Image (cartoon, rainbow, N blue to C red; front, side, top):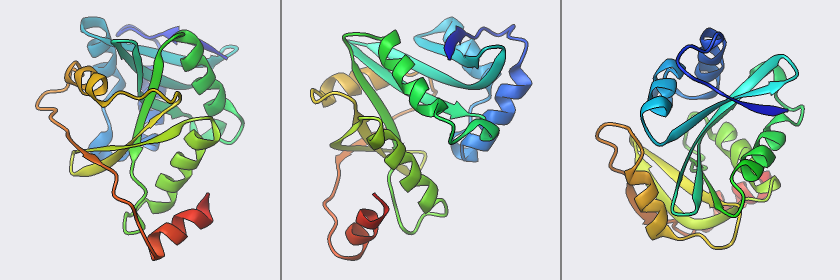
Length: 192
């Protein structure tokens, strides 16, 4: 698998749009054409994930102060559970060597409409070496958990990185992950 930089004249924007709509809830969706524009005019990098000639997904990244942030990772639903996500994470780490690799994801919540999907995502990242930082942020009315591949997560640097994200009125609220007890903790434990 390889990373191919995407610009606004990329021939397969419709395919990327279908993948994005399948992968993300409506409130988190950003059109790939807009992501390409943001990458051309700002700090983001937008890559197609290719296996030979086939486009199997995409990733959007951003770096700042020795931190590499995985803003979006999406794999075509026909290509899931075939190892492409793990390969994409490996490429992310290789593409940004000597950096701290960060991702955020919707916090597991038993009451969420996509509770199993949230747990599956977290399990995927943990299986690929990411660790809990104990830090979270809230935006779009959703709580996101911050995971890090390395042990040296620095919240101050992460906040400065997030201030560079070119999204209008993006002002996340940061908080420390509460420790659960009883039912939810047991339920999460069963899933991991």
